[in-house]
Length: 408
Length: 99
Ligand SMILES: Cc1cc2nc3c(=O)[nH]c(=O)nc-3n(C[C@H](O)[C@H](O)[C@H](O)COP(=O)(O)OP(=O)(O)OC[C@H]3O[C@@H](n4cnc5c(N)ncnc54)[C@H](O)[C@@H]3O)c2cc1C
Ligand code: SF4
Image (tube, rainbow over all chains, first blue to last red; front, side):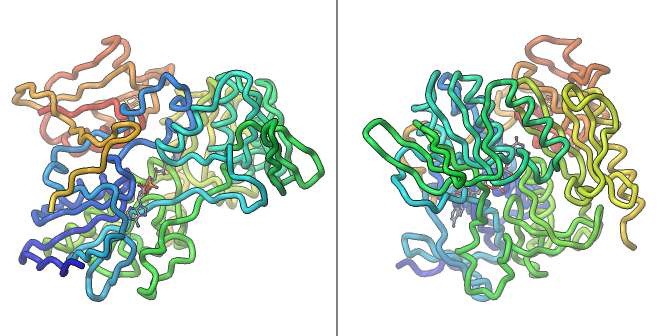
């Protein structure tokens, strides 16, 4: 076991746990805030940070060059130590150390929690062979090795990732069945009307849906695998993709008295429970957004990773350099996109908050459409299918509409 | 304690890639957009509206000025923060800030 490294005052050491998008962008922001001490980024994947959205889309095609996914880093991130292929197994926030899987300890003066999520697995009996998840490039390499024309693929889960995989696999010529307990695909957050429209589009491309049911068992035989559903249906499956949501990677923070009920609880400036020396960002951070209300929420969308990482890095950088903190409220506009077949689904704002009042704002549900989500008659979120020329206008409506209701 | 990344198997994503690494010597700041990578997400237009815009068809407006790569005119230093934000915000990582 190695002793904790002495901290070289006055600059100190910033340790970033998680070498993906959030970790990279937070690192850049800590530097940008003027921190000149050492920065160590730890990641258990053996890769430099890379871009995940293509993994459920074009990267499933065998011709796609996965090395193209590596993020471009700002030159600010040059002077950084990358400890890749190493895992942090514990942290002591009072002693200010992290412990590696090797048993090494490392001391820090600032800590960034950017350890993201991992896919949930189905807990059903049966062989594991042929069952996949999609979060990493290794996952994709395994899956796409078996994904070819005529292959029978069952996607479990009808969220965005499940639907994207279904669309991509259909495009590649696979036979695709989607199994999910909801009544329509992407019921959360799109709600019934738009989810049903999405289902029609998938069905027009030949995807079969089995909704309101769950898989209960995997049968593995010589002639391949099949999936038994709760309504008694047996679906032959050469491949199964489990896209049933994710679990935050918070175990390494256990024992510090933090609220880890759903990711890491942060304040509006991404400080972990008000601590000046620990921030969180990306998919794991649960923070309040006064653009809507004071309720801390986790957001699993790409654009929010950049926003939270930049703000978290700034918060920590200011604290490490002794600069006065930026007190402006952090009010990012949530947005996400999803590409399925040739359609781009783009959302701005919060759909959940307006889930009780969903209306078509313009267009046709089966063509290009704008769907609005309202609370107290006010637009909180919008989803556009196509209508690209309207992005700026609808995004502006969200910021204007919600700003009015920012609590004082 | 610099650690060499583990053997890059089976796909090599271990190399560090930095923006502005083309080594061109330019005094001023410019943006270079790879229009083949770009999928018209428009995130850049939210981050740096003075530099990026979508046209009336919802396509990145630079498409009328170039087909494969768009290189901007020299940009004022005051735009650096916004332009860097745009480069980070681009889902396809199609924007490079040079200089
Ligand atoms: C297949 C897929 C498709 C997506 N498509 C879209 C899309 O179309 N649109 C959209 O808006 N968003 C999309 N997203 C969401 C987006 O990619 C995520 O929001 C983003 O990747 C989150 O980044 P992060 O850095 O917070 O977390 P992650 O990317 O999860 O990174 C966390 C990193 O930390 C590492 N780590 C965890 N624990 C430890 C530890 N103890 N020690 C060391 N390292 C650790 C992990 O291995 C991982 O590398 C998609 C995500 C996936 C997986
Ligand atoms: S953000 Fe990227 S993909 Fe979107 S329009 Fe700008 S350059 Fe193109």
